Length: 319
Figure 1: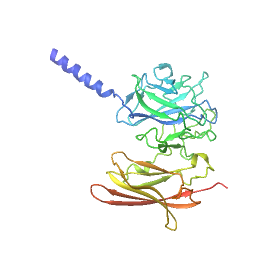
Figure 2: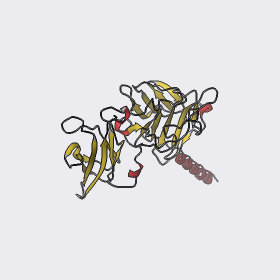
Figure 3: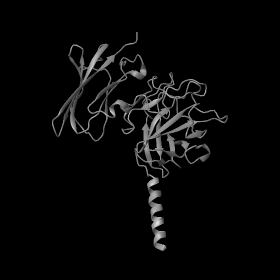
Figure 4: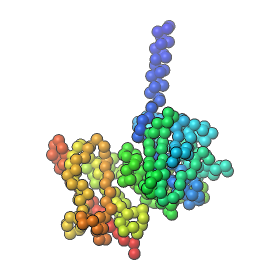
């Protein structure tokens, strides 16, 4: 009888251990930030987390801090509708006022309340930390001395993460909602220029199941600053194995205008990858308005196999 009881308790402990996943740095990340609020109110801000793992994660007693101040305390059960972020899932944190009005009208946040305080709406961003119940930093975005990595306060478009598994403090890994892929409505019934609890608009979904594929996003782009949040274009590619990668920019006549990468060793263990082109040519000046060919050459280290792809990028001006 004692042996059966021991076996039963052991089985229960294994089951419980399997149900509780101790998340480490990068396992759960800040995926989207509506620091500018919505058309209804600049105070109607929200923030989304994403779970990079294949296990559910208990967020009880986790916190989100901004410039040293706790802006969301997930120990406050009165504001929590859910304490768990599901495997490969999203967790939505949003403002809720005393009248019950929330930032997003048609999507119920996992955490809603006055406890989610506002982020700054200034061009200069803030340092935002996601900490677990032990106070360990799980994810960090440091915009304390630079502009937010994305988002538009005039258009009320959110700051979106491009690839949740890549560096949080790489500016190239962030951008602004493209206003075409959106989800939800604000408290006044206006469309949300963001993707709460859904795949981000700038996420290169097409790269997930393809090898050596080149993508160019945010094209046309405006390196002269005509549209402030569209001054660069993001060049994305995926490789499966370690390789030497070259990315070159040509004009339509076939003349080389810029080298983005030249025979650079790139690891296949971290993929997809992104590079940013700011429209600068070989001489340091911005290239003329027009269509450009982005060409990638991938030479695998082990086999010597060569893959080449090309895509177009458009440099524009607003007249």
